[in-house]
Length: 229
Length: 249
Image 1 (cartoon, rainbow over the protein chains, first blue to last red):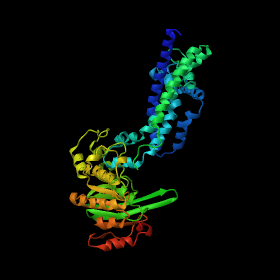
Image 2: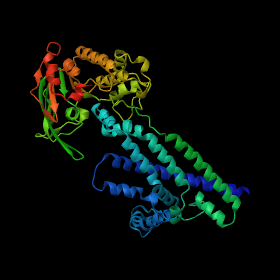
Image 3: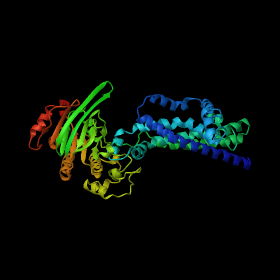
């Protein structure tokens, strides 16, 4: 294999890491916010919202990608609005790949975050309230640190999943080498083109990164969370 | 302490509907709310602390209104300057003893740092002999040490009153005697007003300067004034009313 192949592989890998990193950051914010909301608040439509948040876990990624295309495509309601007001187009861009990966991986953060928040007894928050700590501060100082291990494990899973995202990404961002061609799409293309050497290397890299991430996640998901009882 | 409260709250858990309706006017440093478990003692105490919003009523301490449904006043728990010691202490598992005690002193979005030293925190660490344990975490402590840490955390903020939810229930009987005597001495020394809830007649006897007996959400008899050491009647009258199961403890 010549050096230009290595450069291509690096391009694919760095793009994939960039997309997975941004997607994980976005799921962190929304997954934690919605996980907390559903763990702590009672409101009508709560279980429906939970179902919608879990849906990307069971829906085929191509179906998700299709719906995204309908929504954020140039003629979709969100896509047209973004284009008109901000001049933003997500289709066939790496930002579109981020959006696709963020939505596919969202339940992997949301579910453990909700469970982790539910496991934090309300008593700790009450104790902080009586001690004069504001609601925002007690979320950052008490709730989040006590739920953190569960959330972190979900984030690592989400990162690994985002790295290998294929279906929804292909629908939204396409397959443009150097721009939107991520690891699993590059593997697919290499196999289609009969370039087994490239496919082997890319597949091995993907597997190694995912194994490393999963090992870290297992370490963070112990049978018990450090609680006093 | 002048404590004047009336708390009415209908609570529903599953099919059981429970109405709490408690009234008390106390002029004592040590108030005890006594009764069997399920009588609504914790709910009443949470109502005073602002952790539970009653349906109606009022809470006044030393002339200041903390809650008044008719006047539309509900002071959030953060502003009430009360200290609450939970039954199993609710120490923050991710913070060591010193950080737990310093918790209320740092008001921002960050917890006290491990290396930080506050004079008030060090004073209470010293007073409760927690020095050698200051860097340990709650799960490494014994029951008595946890209680001392919880008391220190509560007292550091200089509350106007100390609310204690079954403070000795989590301890074995020998330690219970020790900690009871310790709290008694501490309260006498600091003269901090306290409201203690318990199902244990011995707590009533020792701390019940003024006692409110609760049964199924209602006050059972007019609060009686008694001098605990001189008046064993207070003890007897209480034990006569509680369920046998409670007495067996």
